[in-house]
Length: 407
Image 1 (cartoon, rainbow, N blue to C red):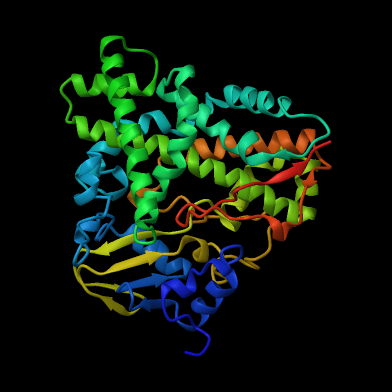
Image 2: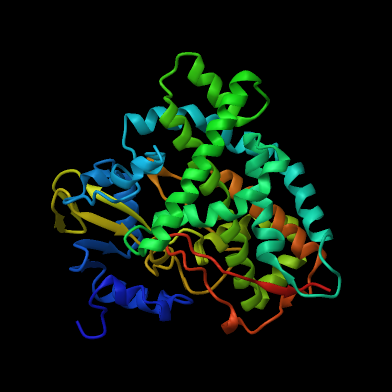
């Protein structure tokens, strides 16, 4: 149809990176199950279709089900053997069920809520470290270090070792963009992943000799008590929790703050009642401009989506960002409303792969936006909104820099 992109390269072109939603609305209205002949994949833009696929376990997250699975894909096999990782993201039951059960107790809402005082203390400490009267870049000053410090403390990473993770994490997380990476970026991502693996291998050995009160010690003990957690599984769980456990929160804070600065009435509303509105505000910010853009699934048998047959081995891409702005599910979806009711967005996915770290991301987001609204109600962007630049990451969506004036 006229006006529709021909391939995903057109749909996801850099020119639309800042605001892709006009294109998503057009595709959803004209061809909601859109086939990209260049990649042989179907892209879903409607909430109902995305939710149905994510809920149905016949749709696999394991790329080995993909027809002509690329041997160089770092997610499983091929080059990925360099790291010895097959992550929880790309496993199906029963392996996925077993591994998730082993770590889920550490990430229940009740367990995570105990971290609130520590998150509050770190947030205050980072904000107090700013230079008064000068613009404050929220990304390196708060959004990046806060979740990094929290996940390091959870895992028991020594304080002296934490700075090196700042460089590794952005490169390692780019592996989620596989298929859209050049050789240099792929190599950098794999090298960063290897650095994670080598570091944690040493930390595992240390925690076996001298356990502590941290997540890695708990996982090592499970392994040594004769459970089915293998060395490869231990590595994959820890690296995934580390990378996913703070990259998403970093982007939640950055994306959310820009949205609030650009829709000023909602920021003023939050400032009027920070503690009362922060939880709802975080949910709306996750819906409006979430940190995770999309996820993929593979048909394990002949399956149907909204009347269309998908053959075994074909991939569908559930475009979470588009689903979260579907007018059939959310009234006036392009309007930010921090008091929006019935806000069941898909940012944390759905079904068995629902984000393990969702409770932690929510807690950190609530603390940050409560503290910012309480302390800096006159905050504003220190540059024009159109001058802000998106990170090159695609699956994980965020800003390179968010300078603001606080005083």
